[in-house]
Image (cartoon, rainbow, N blue to C red):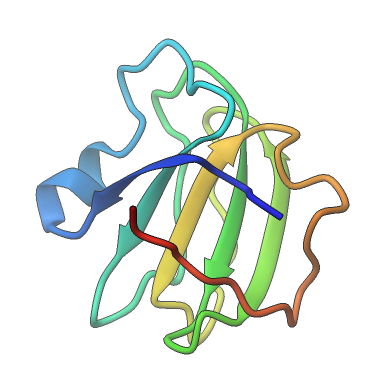
Length: 108
């Protein structure tokens, strides 16, 4: 099953800081992948204009936490052990995956 067809990698401080701020929307099947070798244990939706689905992964790509339809101007709780976060259009996750699943990135 495919969660996103196109993904943008935010793997430096500036790209992670800006995230989806300033965008009017996120196209279906697009994703923003936030990664840090240190940790990605929390995200916020401050200054965003739309809701998103959020997936927290550990270094082994195991799903630790899923936040569905996170509204603008919110902040997640800490997710210990997370190093990668995938942000998707709200409603993208639905019942496609669950906590404990292992995800895979396929680069084309």
